[in-house]
Image (cartoon, rainbow, N blue to C red; front, side):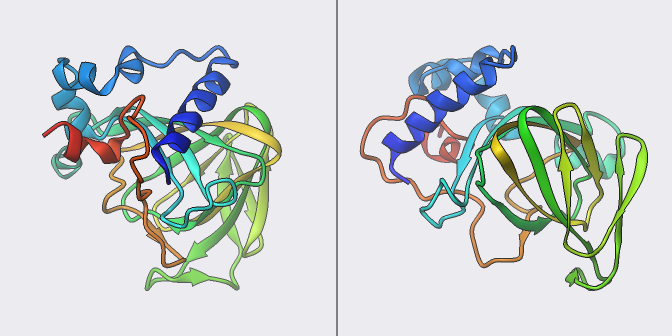
Length: 227
């Protein structure tokens, strides 16, 4: 992705988030130089907090992509200890018909919440014992406290305010239907470097072409810009 395109997505995504009355934390708006000099820098890098824009390395963001912002995040080491900050929170913007491709998580349990906009549609499959997709069995998921059973590959449509809980191993893809969607994610500790297993042969992060200076850094920029 060109950096100029990333900067445009950030600007439009921030405006979309603000339109629902949600205010991002101050570190969201720091320039790269401000962030590098700030007291936020070590924590954001250690916990992978901040902006994240991906086209999964496929260079067709409008069809296959996602904007994310990690608001808070614990550490994987805390999970093994069973104490400490064991949770994470994200905001996501899924554009109309923009696919977040089929994947599962090894460790992360998550609530996916439609915070506003259009319908959020998820395609769901159970996982087999070997981790592969179970294309024959029904899948049951909690939707706001009640269990919903779907056939393999069934579509779950969430209106604003509705949410679904996905446990580790549940295969899922999602997109906005009828318009853009603001999504909330509340989960156990998030690690996007190791805890995503995609059905497609794709990467988790975008490959960036630096055609202009970054407005704000992405989480995937931190190793380059903050060292």
